[in-house]
Length: 242
Image (cartoon, rainbow, N blue to C red; front, side, top):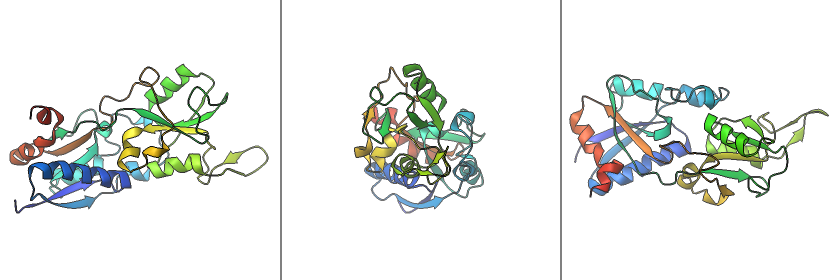
């Protein structure tokens, strides 16, 4: 296999690790698979303020990558499957989705306490609507704080020492409220080798995970039938048939 394929991706450490995972899966079937990684800066990565709950199901994190695909600047893209918009742009197709490495949402707490043991009124940072609703239903006393950023940035919201700006307000280094804990996806921590940061895998009856959480999606142009077929070997349904 002589051709070198251009893979579009966001540029965060997690996004790059996800590309490596997909390449590893492809090379199980095509030992000579060659690829060039093309990092693409997306609006979703630059905008650190819009709550995730306001843009779920949109192309907030994929728009620029979709455009690169449609303009043939890249051959395919790798995404966290749950970041895909509800309806792909015309001309694009999901060639395959991988098995989830871990579907759970997890708690990372400053004190190592579980959801049951966190103090009354604890501040918990998270992003998605389903996580917020699950937490408030389980513990109405929790103060839920919107957070944005990559995994390392989110972990710093728990790790950072707060300092007093004035006699009434506490801030972290990013001027976000000091947090007792955050809720994020287990899969992201696992892919980055940070599984030891998990305080608790949150039971599904408290937070129901996104149906595609932990899976990766490979998107390409619908018209590139040979490439669609080539990439489909990583699809979880195809692999299950082997």
